[in-house]
Length: 61
Length: 378
Image (cartoon, rainbow over all chains, first blue to last red; front, side):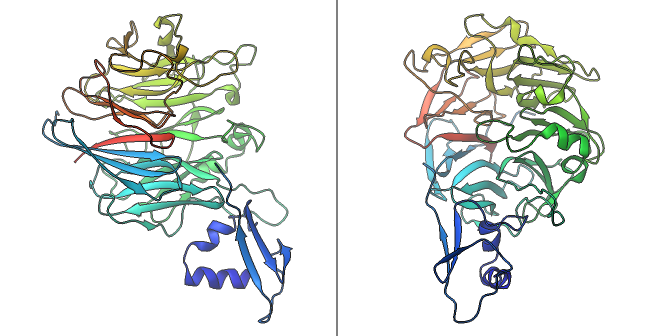
């Protein structure tokens, strides 16, 4: 997962920091799903056939 | 030096985006330019006075992490910076801190092209040497064990989170800095931020708390006099104060305010050429701290003698039922003669006075809640 996010950041510089904080945790209101299952572990292994979805909550007011 | 002919550019940071207001020379007509970054929370927006072109916007967007945006053409085009302020990653097993948002931006000394300082929530101080594109944590404050103890933890601070604010760079000495921390006091550095000393002598704290403890001190806004950098004014949770260096003791000048109004508020503004003149915007600090104008009747107050006496300035402002206030960064001035004053309200209105507060007029309505207003001569 960490490599996936690093690759995303290579394509869109700065995007990783908007989703993952400086201590390596998924930010509040952000969620990562691997094949439909919620994941907070950046060390989780993902394969080329896995579907990864990154969702943000539209909260605030 | 009085600059009479330049136009004023207002930089307005709001809960839902950034707006620029371009004034004509008479300061009567204002062209609105915005929104920029609609929907993003813009905490502070600041034009670099050293080049008149670089502008930084401290932003966060409800669900996304914090960032800064930068323009190098005075707000026409914007780009996200490469590396916004962020605390250092700590070793596995330790509790590291995370920047929730950048709250305050201050350009460095006139002699330091490209240097900026940023204050964050939770408390953190950062410095950029490349005009805001990347930022370094200042460990002399952020990692000092005593200051970490004073800063507290996630359960401390204001309802919106603790703030490091009022970053002041002495115009005479680039290494001489002041900062304010909500629930953390005022502090001074004479070595560019490598080491810090509390500057809380003479400040009061909420009844029954111990004034010797730094974390009980809640400065709201500290400003330096451009005319006399040895003089500072402070709007504190517990009153209005003045400090005259080399003394280290603040004097509560707010006790001269009318008792029915009190001396609680957020912003303080200092005249660019007269160290004895300053403005405040009182707020209701009674009972549950509703954070609105006293009795729904907004007014600025001015002192022209360093706080010995204060005069009410409300001509043109609503006479009643105006339940808003002005946040600590949302009142400012230009350097024209007479001085122009500008304030943005929590109700989304932008007001100005072109005669040092004698009369106020509304420039814009129906903006989102205004977090900060800055004025630059361009």
